[in-house]
Image (tube, rainbow, N blue to C red; front, side, top):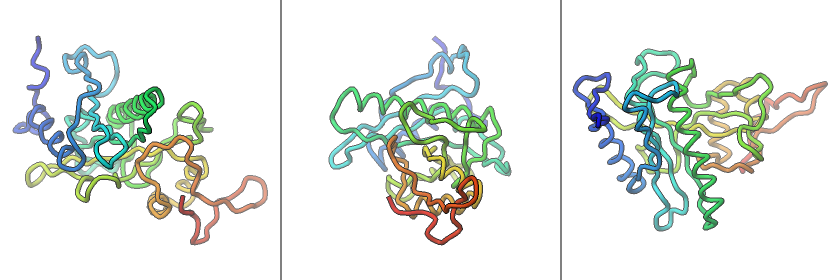
Length: 245
């Protein structure tokens, strides 16, 4: 059997199994012990037919008062973007939080949805020119449709994770290297338009002000306000552009 964990990353003194250990320890310290929910073994062995780097998904199940699960990718950070890239360089992994309310079927469906979402983003950033920074948005069609069945959201915005302890967002690897964790948060049409009109920084600040986190809520209503105008409604330029959920 091939040694799938002994591969070198692009930093020659950092092996993939060492990076995996560092990420697992980081998750354990900040949230709880992670478990491998999906292993892209075919990809690690070089046989995957999917584009992009091979990506595993780690899950931290609910524990104690934390009644939500956390999903995190591993594999995207093995492929390092140039540090000076205007599209967001360095090493990165992707996370989402998933409510677990005790209904096994519903809980598993949401968990799988979140796991598939972060896994696809972990691959996508290496095969398309996607800018990864706070408030940057992603939509997959010119006239975006709901990204999930039965959901109101039509796109995604990148946010720094807010639910774990301080210091989770960036894992330092020595003096010059690090892994940044990003949450691809589903957003509604009004929020997507707010980012287009007012820019990524304003969108990021507005989402945070409104209390939006990386928790996956398919029925979350938009927190962007609209102002009625002629023809297509325009987003308000007022200071209360965003409302708290």
